[in-house]
Length: 148
Image (cartoon, rainbow, N blue to C red):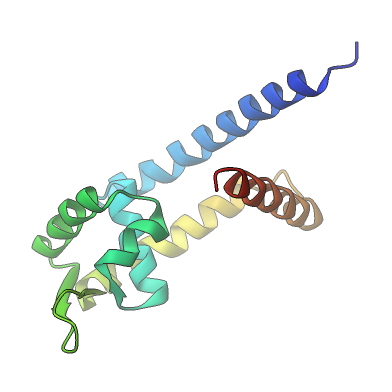
């Protein structure tokens, strides 16, 4: 029996949700081994790869509310993984940067995380991964346009 468009959309939602759940659970276990939750890892990973960022921009880059961002940054700063710097030209802006200790932690975690994701995605060929990336980007952008 052929599925109609609505049934396909529901099925796609379920399949995407389940895949996301399995992948996230695997990644989150790794972060927990190092005493981090997924949000803390996301903040450190952003700073690790992109360098110093204004606090005001971090939340939108990792999809986190600004109130929660302050709490996460406070926790990471207390653990010595990042530091804050007030902007010299605009005192309303505070920058956050990863410390040497935070960089050392990510030097350990990130290669393991990357390899784990590669293994998880191993069922797909490079071409299939590229197709999946293109299709999911297309879907995400179309949804973003609908919400305007």
